[in-house]
Image 1 (tube, rainbow over the protein chains, first blue to last red):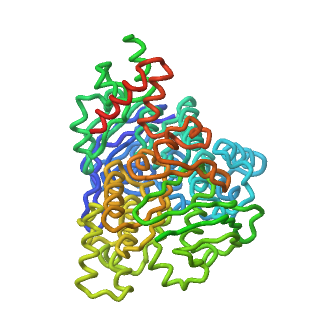
Image 2 (image 1 turned 135 degrees about the vertical axis):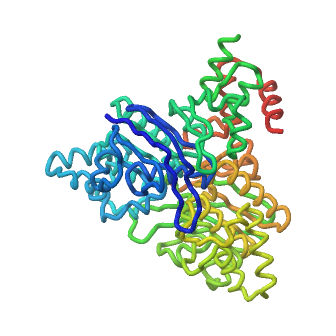
Image 3 (image 1 turned 90 degrees about the horizontal axis):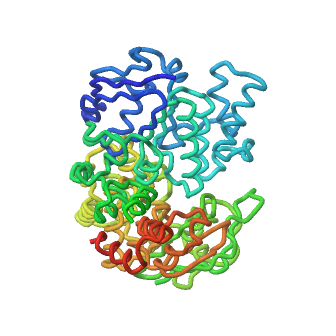
Length: 269
Length: 275
């Protein structure tokens, strides 16, 4: 399992929009990290540097201490799996099974081993019964889960999920939470980009807030959503979860989740 | 003005079961109907059927009826239907025309096709971009927008047509909390000022809590619950349908379950925090 380090990374899109402004971020093996921020704050741009889809104008990205540099995307794909925000930019195969098999097949897997990998990933996202279907016959929420399954099947040490809960119902969100927990339990690193504050606060041990291409807050959910940081969150066009606001109002400390709120109130009572 | 589905049942061409099963609902002038339900419940199909795109463009078999002010939508010509009823797809990127070189042109595309004068087109485009907080994107290339930005531009393009009925399939799915709030405000203003009727599918029940007059729960193609927004979103059965209650309801029930505070106390607290 590997560490990820982003050192002084700056990136501007063609046309001059400066998306990342010298970002430093170190992520340990087995860490579950959520990146939050306004649309256009640089979150997706940052994670696209992890698997070489984008290359920094300045600075460097290190995987396990070695610079990504000019390493080929195919080589990086063994280390970092990235599920896109828009599944339709990722999906291309004619069946769900072939879609998920594409990555592991390129890793050299064949036969029963490949089939097992695919079956396991589909089972985990709840698509085992849809293996023979055409991905475009699935609704958006299931295409999204399919794009996640394709990444899981690669069994990369680093898994990046860009807005994984978009379009998911309660059961879908619970599935994604279980996927994150299972990866970190295996020592894999999970990085997500999300606007879903409940999902972030309940699922991730560390939260990073981005604003205009920079990291402005970095800590546990209890730290980042603590009342002292509300002005910084507002500057980043974010607001704390309601449970945090209730906890602050009732003066029981920082309670970013409903469970932590109940716990803190019960402890006081 | 009323758009009404009566016993609407729809099956996609080649499908083995109905995606919508005997749905009755209506949206009328100046009101917002929220639609919630689990994944694959038929919510997007409901949008396609209500807008008349299914079965006219998306092939399948429709029984029952879909009418606008008493006229069957299947009897209306496509351009007439498009003027009465605007739809925002779940996948906003798929909605952009692909022909405009700037966001301004993209949003102007619809009003120009309505034959409006140039000043009227400009006025509409500027008003829509402003209402959604994306005036700064006017000169950007629509093909180079983030997911959330594309979603706002697609919505602006629909709003610029000023349809009587607006069908929105998860209009804020890729938006940050501020963008979501702006969309909520813009839609509320639209209902108040233009008397538009809106049907909106949303997983973000907090948005519906502030926006919708009534909410229906769709599960397995059927409407399983319908009522005023506060009643439906406060219903303890909601999570059983795969729907996340709004934070207000979740926090209140967590406190109640832990025996912390009476309903009146938590109601007062929520009201304080809402201001």
